[in-house]
Length: 137
Image 1 (cartoon, one colour):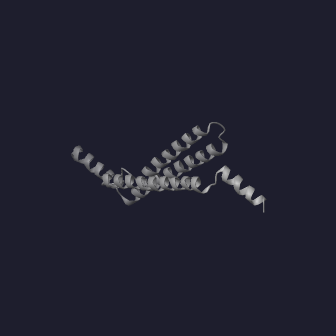
Image 2 (tube, one colour; image 1 turned 120 degrees about the vertical axis):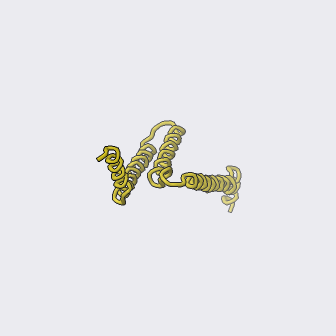
Image 3 (tube, helix red, strand yellow; image 1 turned 90 degrees about the vertical axis):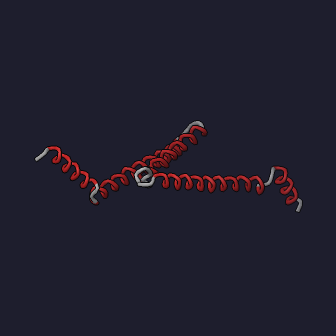
């Protein structure tokens, strides 16, 4: 038996084993468990950082933003499997569109809330004038 053919048949058997449904299931299960544990660690660290943090408010926001971005990247790779599929360009375009939509939704919601806060909340002079008018009744 020619060793060259023997090695190629062994490597093809290993390749078949890697592409078997059982191996793919174990690989995907491993990815999901790693992603879940990583997300859990990042979420709990953000929670404990925000609850127990004593210091500069801006540093807290920067730390939470870094943890949120790390969790976003972790979920992209472990749950959405970005980079593991056949047409990665299509998945990348969908992800960019998703980021755009979420940015518009969050930014628009914040804009509406701050705008309503400025328009609805009375000024100090208006509050004093209203309170004085109520005392005279």
